[in-house]
Length: 135
Ligand code: SF4
Ligand code: SF4
Image (cartoon, rainbow, N blue to C red):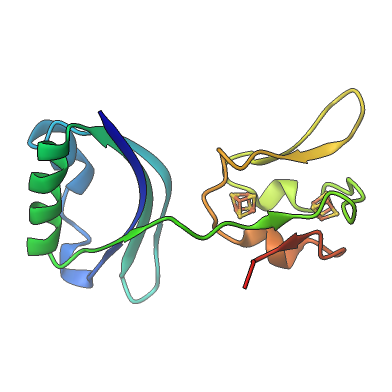
């Protein structure tokens, strides 16, 4: 069983395609959508976690490439600098996956890399530069 996180970028002509449905029903993959956006130019971007057998990935990649979908591994990570974090919670409302979360007893903010989809929203939101994109 293989599991991977990918960024799928859709050209405008493929935005209407029921990609998730087809990945599940025709390619036997388990699809977990971590983030999905469509910009004003109608380009689509989806961050997904896919699980399945190697051969199913091959057929899924063929299907996506025929649609003109760009497939990139989700490799970038953010760096959370605990020593700079004041637990001000300014980043919490912009974090779509609760990768940045606060303990309701201690009011301490923490970061969970497993939940992070690298949307970078917190980088701009943090007034203390406690979140960075590694160069
Ligand atoms: S980049 Fe920041 S805002 Fe986006 S998911 Fe990761 S921790 Fe949350
Ligand atoms: S905005 Fe910055 S300082 Fe405030 S809780 Fe989030 S990471 Fe910590």
